[in-house]
Length: 126
Image 1: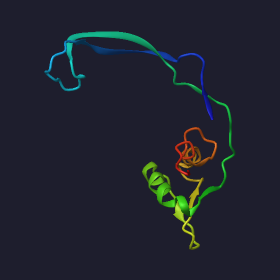
Image 2 (image 1 turned 60 degrees about the horizontal axis):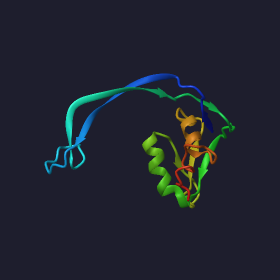
Image 3 (image 1 turned 120 degrees about the vertical axis):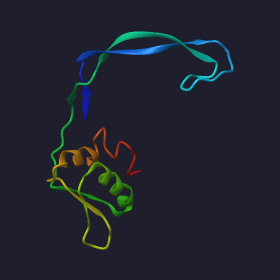
Image 4 (image 1 turned 135 degrees about the horizontal axis):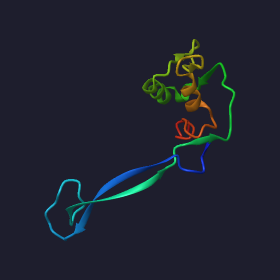
């Protein structure tokens, strides 16, 4: 788990185009109905909070076993992330994800039950 650091790391400047409500029926792409572009822009400096500090740790196991009930859902997600896995040797059809692989740290984030950005947080195992 992680918590947001208390101070912003830097500021980022963004700009957006001003719109005006004119009630017209002419629609412009990307503009809500009834509005039109003004051709003027506003700029603002916003703080960027992108530094996190760990609040909990987990010892990484040698691997993860995924119950066969979730194999058809989890396998494509692991594949999409480039994480290697194998089907269990027995007829149950469970998945085995070895932790000792190049993306083992990512596998841990996705598969640890208490991870705040993993499959449990996304309700994949619900």
